[in-house]
Length: 347
Image 1 (cartoon, rainbow, N blue to C red):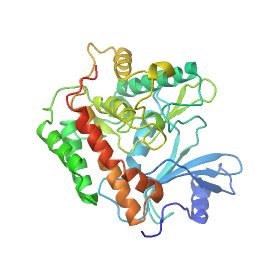
Image 2: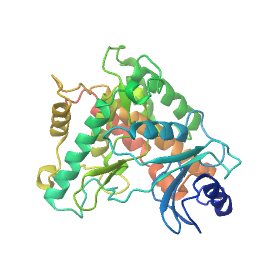
Image 3: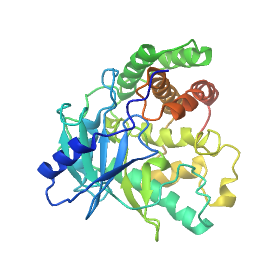
Image 4: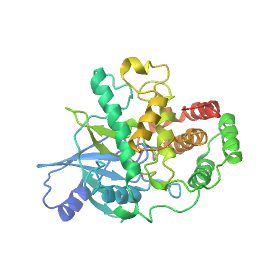
């Protein structure tokens, strides 16, 4: 394996950029790489009078249409006028010569993040609040009118799942390192069962809605930040709902980030049916969304994403190569879970 090249910043160049672009934010600066941002390296910058967050593309050869920090910057900037909490975006620099790769700088938001969805440090009432905020946040996102926030051009028109399946099939093939039979079988099923283009409501889709991409107030556990918008676009809101439910089926812990085998009722965590029903209630839906295709698709997409992470780890340009290889071991697990989810009734 080649030496990792994505864990450091050229602090001299960053300092120069901040002095020019944000003169009211004072150095000297020091930085710390976060555990988050497996796709796009993310750093906390600490200065004399504030903290900032810098998120950048990784170095090295990148897959086409991956690591789209430009889209992250655009969608969070637009959503700042809504009641969905996102950090303030300070600036985007697309000139890779400035610090080595394109990057953006945003507000640092203090709060709790839960890599483990069991949220073990909380009591039942606090945990219930966290999950209620999760559901409300997702509903708030899907209530946003893209046109009203200047995002009518944020995605292509047409069948969302067809577009997404086509994109991730190509991404997977371009990063494939071995033959994984369950994943090939899942891909075949998805290809044969793609839903027809429907006149469903088109919303802003986060693309990776999971509790570990949310930040909660440390005192009252209200949602104070939604992050990691790299996969966001316009499309079918069922994809976000399915992403969260899909993730919960995985193993417990900070790697699996699932709730498999957990007594959710005992812990104050909604089961899949309750989550879907509460989400539907917040949106005043006449009937709960049909996730028959969406959930198997989300397993496939996560497997394809992890294949890209594994490939970058092997190539030496992953944000966290050791963790990237560990996550690569989950590719087959997601594929198997995806096959098991076919024709399962979720509501």
